[in-house]
Image (cartoon, rainbow, N blue to C red):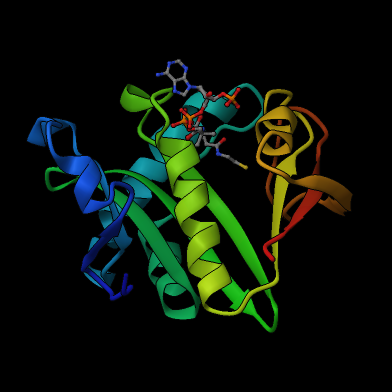
Length: 180
Ligand SMILES: CC(C)(COP(=O)(O)OP(=O)(O)OC[C@H]1O[C@@H](n2cnc3c(N)ncnc32)[C@H](O)[C@@H]1OP(=O)(O)O)[C@@H](O)C(=O)NCCC(=O)NCCS
């Protein structure tokens, strides 16, 4: 299957689509630059719900999404024309960074986050990456197990984003997974 910006790619192979009502089909594709606002909206909705206990701000601006679209790629899940989830991947040498995994709170816990992770890993593997790196905030107690179950292990820590005020002290936990 070919990955092209703006063109539908995977999640359900064609053979798996038969019998599924069209409204239930969720496709993952590479985002177009014109979708920066929709991507920022889904990221901010998801992170606000999950992180407002320690941080009170939007997670990202439209301008920051536009900048990331020029250095890497967003994969987005598209449910009938509306972006319901996204994940950012940026490749550097044989490593890839995955971040900003976000699913619209209205459709969480239906498998979409897992599908976006798998799609991002497949995409980076096919492009030659051998390792996937992520980082999570140490205050998010539910996230380590989510990523452990998907093959990630802790590799270290890093300071939280400089200049961002939080209600609680926090830092990043770095995690990685081999892709080959
Ligand atoms: C983290 C996040 C992306 C997960 O998205 P999601 O779509 O809910 O993820 P999934 O549905 O694939 O998986 C979530 C859990 O629900 C379970 N689940 C999946 N389908 C389910 C269903 N039909 N019914 C009940 N539970 C289900 C999954 O098994 C998974 O649990 P597991 O880790 O034990 O496998 C989402 O919670 C989110 O956007 N959070 C805010 C942003 C964030 O924190 N991002 C990560 C920062 S590092």
